[in-house]
Image 1: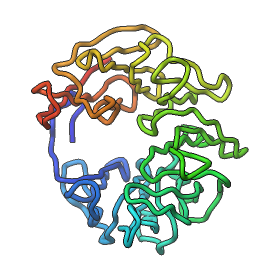
Image 2: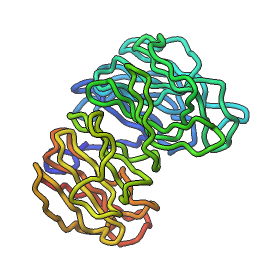
Image 3: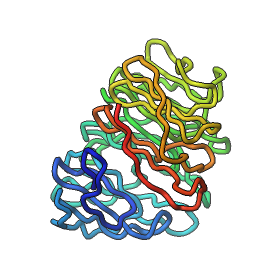
Amino acid sequence: MLDAAGQELWGFDAWQTGWLGPTTIGAAGTSGPGAALETVRLYDLSGSQTGEVSTVFESVRYGGGHDIFAGTYPGNGDFAQGGTFSIWNGTAVSRPQPGNAQAWSDDGSRLAVLLPPWTNEKVAMDGRLAIVDGTGKQVFALDGWYGSTLGDYTFSPNGRYLAGCLTRDPDNFEQVAVVDTTTGQVTVLGGACSGLAWTDEPALYAPSTGLGKKWIRWTPAEGAVPVPGVSHDSVVLAARNGNIAAWSPTEPAMLDLVVKGVFEQRQLSGPLPDNGSYITPYVSWRPDGQALAVVYSRSGKSDGDLALEMVHV
């Protein structure tokens, strides 16, 4: 836990953490990805453990401060991940039901899930995309499209659009696509399924394979357009208020900022770690869009010698 200046207040071992309420944090697992995460522990803002959900989950999707989370159970047999999930509503865990939980809407009322039948893969699974409400009841299904359990999924702030990792043919690679959950229309943007970020407009900033740039901006009105003011190879992360941060593999210690339409550069204390594409989670916006938390490499190498720096705009 850090304060607004980036000073560490306290910490604990965990693999997946998230807000369950204004003063409650959920934390699951200690052993890293690929293993059962054990139980979900609850902490208050002082770092004291206040409770525990004793069910064992493989992965957990927190409901953004609405006292709710979805947990996917550990997989078995030949499948890479689990194929059943439950919802914890602040008091109890629901009965297991088919599906792999992916992402909650901002208001915690809807959950994107992938449903069987699954493709039989060792790394990830493809399933049918659907949306359930907070009780687990299905409220939307997308026929003829398949999503990967290893892709990013994120709802627009107004809850109408869902960006995710989809394909029509599970034998082909998934790509970034936007689903209009009101009409069922799907817009394929291409590109890798990571680093997706919405603004309040709503506008989606996402990887792309077209338009001559590594990152694009999509809105319902204009469709996909290049992100203005950044180089062709820049990775872009947008804040909810529309501010953007960008960085290029050619200058991994330099952060480009576009704040209220004004361009500026910030020199970091060290280069961003190279994870193959310099994509998040090494940079994260504060919810108000006025500061970023940046993880950089103190050694200049990808050797795990990392540190955190706060960049204020």
